[in-house]
Image (tube, rainbow, N blue to C red; front, top):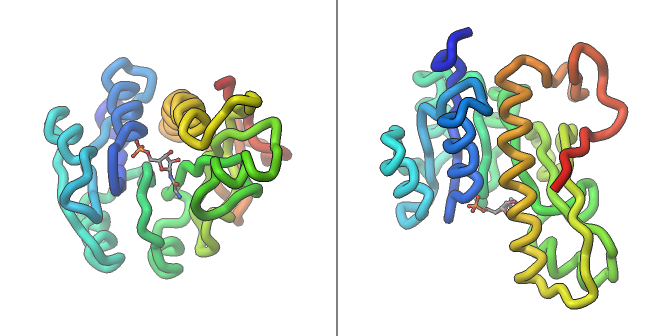
Length: 207
Ligand code: GAR
């Protein structure tokens, strides 16, 4: 596949800093592919400005049916959820199974759902981080591809921890997308494979 043939659609709801990290990695050649479309469920998402700035098609769609129909026409190789805060239904996740990934701000399976930084601090954890996983119908429960660990310092607040985790996300997500674009990561029967072998534990990407 030539550089521009691996097409990536990115779904966002907000700032889009992970979208930006992925765009930057396609432009630097770290990801052998291109972001072909950005879809937001919110018209005020700053990530839409990032898409416009990069000359990427962008659109606001708010139902699974509308998104599925748009993606069926676009037929991207990969659909990336990047700060996408709307829950996708089971029919949607099944339709795009194996081509749909998400980044979550915790070391899954710990802290599915919201307020992960506050919960990790309240639990007295010494480590936190982020995970990239294939999306399946159960929220934040799909097969985990890779994680980055972020140490928690005694003085950390939810805000400081969020900043550290986001910095780790901006390394982790482009790396995982690069592996997928290179054909090194796949999902077969809800199991992650890396370089033709089933993964026993999530890959670790240094934060
Ligand atoms: C990221 O930290 C991501 O992990 C989180 O939202 C943030 C989006 O930032 N996602 C979730 O909480 C998904 N449940 P961004 O818009 O700057 O990429």
